[in-house]
Length: 467
Image (cartoon, rainbow, N blue to C red; front, side, top):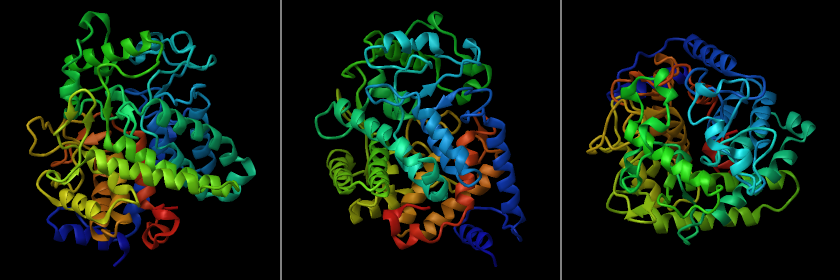
C-alpha cells in the first residue's frame, strides 16, 4: 500500500469518510490542478489570491504562495517575495496590500485612493512608485524565504536571493518589535482586524464594539460583487473596519495606540517562527544567528506568560483595553508550530485539537469554536475551516511528534482542497466550498503537502523546518 493510501486508511479508522485512492494518479492529478490555479493567478511578478475577489498582491498570501511555488519554480517563488518586499516602507513595515495599477479602482475596496499611501504615509516612508495599504499582515515572510532558499540553494546563491531579502526582513521584524509592543510585555499588537488576517473572528467582537462604524453611504463593498453575502463579513463589521483604517490613515499611519490594540497568539507565533528562520538565513550568509534564536525563545516565553490559558488549554487573545478575550479560535492553536513550546503546553494544544471545540467532521480545523455562541459554518472567519491555518497546525503537530494526527490532517486537507476546487475556505463539517474558488494559498499549500514530509521535519533537523 502506498503512503497516500496508508494515510487515508488511518483517517478512515477515525471515522472521517474519504475514498482511498488506489494509485498515485490521484496525487498527480491534484498536483496538476493546483499548479494550474497558480499559473492562472500569476501576474508576471506576483500571484493574486483570486482573480475576481482579490485582484492585487496580499502580504501573507504571497508568503504562503511562495512556499508552494518553490516546488514548481524556485525562481518564481523568489520573485514572489522580492516583489512584495520591494513595496516595503522605510520604517520597515511590509504593507498588507500592494496595488496593481492595471486593476480598476472600483474592483476592490478599500482601493488605493482610500489608503493614500504616497501622501498619508509620506512621513513613514511609504514608497512613491507603487500604491499600498498602510497596515500590515502576519510576518510569515522569513519562514517562506528560508523554505524557498532550501528548495534550490544553488539558484538562490547564484541570484543572491537571501543577501537581498535578509536586510528587508530584518527591518520588518525590527518595526514590529520596536513599534508594536503596545502592551509593554514583549509581544506585538495588531491595530486592525485585517492585520491579524482573520478579519471577522468573534475574538474581535468585543474590541470592535467600541468603534463607531463609518456611515454605510461613505463606501461601497466590491467584495459582494464576487462573494455570497452569507459568506462575507456583515455591513456593520465592514463599517467598523473602514472607520479604524480611516482613523489610522488620518493619523499618518503613526503610533497604534487607538481603540483597537490586541495581542494575538498566531501573529506572534508567526513572528517567532520567522525569527528562527532569520537566524538560519543569517548563518547561511556567514553572520551569527544565535541572538535571533535567543530572541525567539524570549518571545516564546512571553507568549506563554501573557496569552496561555490553562482553563481553555489553548492561547487566547489579549485586548489591551479590555483584558483577555475568552473566545476560542484557531489563532490560539497556531503556536503549536513553535519548536520551543513547553512540552505540557504542546500536549494540551494537541488535546484541544482532538476535543469537542475543534474536532470537525472533515478532519480540518475550524476557525472558531464549534460550540461557541458566535459559530457560523460559512461566514469567513467565524467558523469555516481555512487551509493556511490547517497547514500551520499540521506543521506544529509534526514538529511535536504527533505524527498520526499530522498525517490525518494532511490527508483531510488534500482531499477537501481538491474536492472544493481549491476553495478559499470550507464548511468545517460538510466540506462545502465557500468564498473564492481557485484560491492561491489553498493551491500552493496543497502542492507543499503533496511533497514528501519525511526527513528534516521528523528528525528534528533545522529546528523543525521542512525543506
